[in-house]
Image (cartoon, rainbow, N blue to C red):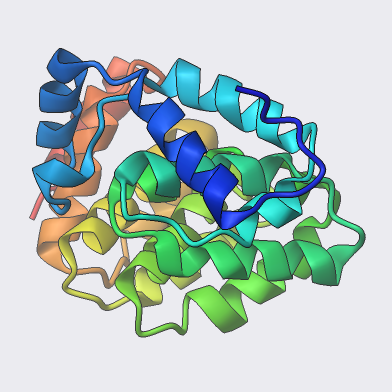
Length: 241
C-alpha cells in the first residue's frame, strides 16, 4: 500500500487499518499486551515495533500532517503510529513543535506510548530551553497523569546534564501523584540521574522529599544499573527507607 500520499481520506485511512492488520503477530500480541496492562487486550493487533517504525517513516515522506487529522479506530498500534509520525515531522518553528507535541498527549494511555513518543521527539534538542519551560508550565501542572509522566520521561531523555540536573531533580521531587506509572517514572529518572550525574544526585537523595516507595524504587533501579559502580550501589543500599 502506498503511504507516501499527498492527502488522506477516511476511506483511505480505513484501508490502511486493514493493511496494518496484515502485519499482526498473535504471539507478539499476547506477549506485548501483557506488558501494557492498562490497555484492553482486544485493542492490540500485535504489530512489532520495527514494522511500525517502518510504516511511520513511509507516512512521514508523504503528507504526515494530513494523516494526523484522521480519526483513529481505537487500536493501540494506531496510537503508537501517531506518536512515531509526530516525532518525524519537521516543525515549522517552536510553536508548531509544541502544538504537535500537545496534540499527541491525549492519545497517551500507557507507559509504552509515552516512552516511545518521548524518545522519538528529537526536535527537543533544537529548543531545549524553550521546551523545558513548556514541560514545566504545561505537562507537569496537568491533572492528566500521563502528561506528568511525559514530562518526567522527557526530562530523563533530554535534560540530565550539568545545565539542568539541579532543576530536574527539584521538579521531580515536587511531583506528588499516586498514579503508579508517574511514580515509576520518578524512580526511573532518579536512577538514570545517578548514572549520569552521580555526585549531584547522591547529594539530592540526602534530602529528597519524594514518597518512600518512590525513593526505594529509585534505589532499587540504581542498584540494578550496569552504569553505576559497585561502591556506589553499596552506598545506595544504606539509604533505603
